[in-house]
Amino acid sequence: MREKIVGVIGGRVCNDEVECLAHNLGKKLAKVVDYLVCGGLSGVMMAICKGFKAGKGKTIGILPSYNKADANPYVDIAIPTGMGLARNVLVVKTADVVIALPGSCGTLSEIAYCLQFGIPVISLRSWDIEGVIKVKSIDEAVQTVKKLLK
Image (cartoon, rainbow, N blue to C red):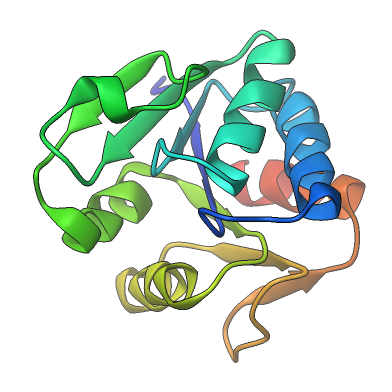
């Protein structure tokens, strides 16, 4: 059976509250999926990777540059693409299910790709868009991931 991958998307800059949210979500997700994929940089991406690794999970960062060294220190597998923002397609296509945390236009583009490709996308304090599963808590997000991956 193929291992399960959750994608987490969100802003490359975030406040302390969102950083804490991402870190705690990462720790809980590590108990229910095999890998985490994200954009591999700062903000939400670094906080989710840090939390996922604290939960003993493995992380994948799909980078916009050609340089593996650009990945945050919590990325286990750095994939340099040289594609800039176009790498957002690869982030969501790698995932079986995606969770959106607060972010800006890059996060919005990744949500749009999920909807276009039929990849389930869960919003936790992120964009409220038709077709996106809106949840109110980390536990609800994790339970939704488990249900979607059955």
